[in-house]
Image (cartoon, rainbow, N blue to C red; front, side, top):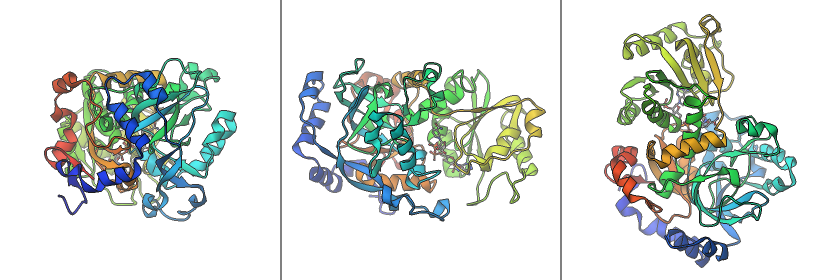
Amino acid sequence: MKEESGCVLLSEYKNREFISALEREMTPEYRNLVQLVEDPKAAADDFSHLKLPESMAAVVLHRDEQEMFSGKAFCEKDPRQALHYEEVPVPVPGPGEVLVAVMASAVNFNNVWSSIFEPAPGFSYIADFARMRVENQKHQQDYHIIGGDAAGVVVRTHPSVHNWKPGDRVTLHGGVNDVSEPAVFYDSVQDPHGRAWGFETNFGAFAYFTVVQQHQLLPKAEHLSWEEAASMNLVTTTAYRMLVSDNGARMRQGDNVLIWGASGGLGSIAIQMVRNGGGVPIGIVSSEKKAAVVRKLGCERVIVLEREPGKDLFLDESGRTKGRQVLRLKALIRRLTDGEDCDIVFEHTGRSTFAASVAVAKAGGKVVTCGSTSGYNHVFDNRYFWQTVKKIIGSHGANYYEAAQAVRLICKGMLTPVLSEVYPLSRTADAIFKMHSGEQIGKLGILNLAPSERMGIRNRELREKIGEQRINILRTSLSGEGGAIC
Ligand SMILES: NC(=O)c1ccc[n+]([C@@H]2O[C@H](COP(=O)([O-])OP(=O)(O)OC[C@H]3O[C@@H](n4cnc5c(N)ncnc54)[C@H](OP(=O)(O)O)[C@@H]3O)[C@@H](O)[C@H]2O)c1
């Protein structure tokens, strides 16, 4: 037992605390559902005829607490104060929607934003979403179930749904779209009514059930367990659009790709994608411990840049670019690349790093950005941009087609999970707090209805071919054989 971190080893996991918590919460209806999910002979009718519970456990924010952090700094806002684990009604699917029993889910940085009510409370996004169409009104509640990554089983479909049926084993895509919008048929990310599931809508992943639109469904990789499959979609689909898609940086063989936050969720998938595509990943991390993880993922070129809390890495107090720091970074990169600059900079870290990202990209190079962890008011020296004809590409999630292409790579085993820890649903707030503190590595998984880890694996042949070591690369390297459960 690892006393100091509150973690227990996998072998000790299937015991006391968690099992008894499940037994308390799981009524016979839930037990039957979990049994059916694990039965390889279960057919669509078995799921359709199964009596479903009326209420479920969920991790929620409360409308009357959305001002609780007013006036506090980012680091003072503790997600654990805002998140509640409680019983709420099971939602009912409307036109074009399905009800999914969530076996497992995963933490993403947007859960941090939701739980500290930044940049605005989720309730305001949901109010806007509810005004769009009558079917969305059910999302407006006094609670907000957050979460944007899940794997599970379809248990109910609205009669208007034809491509999917009860019993289908799925992972979920985060793009909620209005299919009456012309832009959706061009690129659903450009849908003016598009919303991020579980961030700007209700009924997110951290519950026993979720209601989603049929075009959020994607197949589950059957060589992966529920928690492994659940941990992959959001970061993989986002990185795919950023690096591979025609809408992103269109990485080519031999490209040098600078990856900020290389040991994080996006970064550790980006490393795999760059290597698969014949590029050269150069990872940036904040500690030697994280550098070791990144090397383990196959990124040989790593730069460690330590940060002081609350201070921008490349901007001085008056917001001007720290020229010397930028030149130092450029020199470090060149040392790792035989004197070359970066073709692509993979950005999501925001204000603190953006000025450097623009400056270190090669002439004609691209900075592709999907986020702003350290602040969204970016400042950069425009001379480094226009004179060397660089491009800045904005990217947000992925469209359904890009998401399907990315999930295909997961299903073929060409991208593997970067899960480092797994928590029970009741402790989701602790996992989100860990991400808020910047201490997590890779992805943090959550067990929703799955009573234990490593359930849901059907394609053992492919799993064996890829190897347990590779599938559990961050778990075995961080905590010894078997990984840790928190
Ligand atoms: N628009 C979209 O579709 C989309 C999708 C996914 C994620 N995002 C955004 O992308 C960001 C990253 O997401 P994630 O899931 O990869 O988060 P993550 O797992 O927490 O990883 C982020 C990494 O960034 C590094 N970092 C944090 N602050 C930094 C700073 N000031 N300077 C340099 N590095 C810093 C940290 O690594 P070190 O400690 O090693 O530096 C951390 O591991 C979040 O802001 C998220 O909201 C956007």
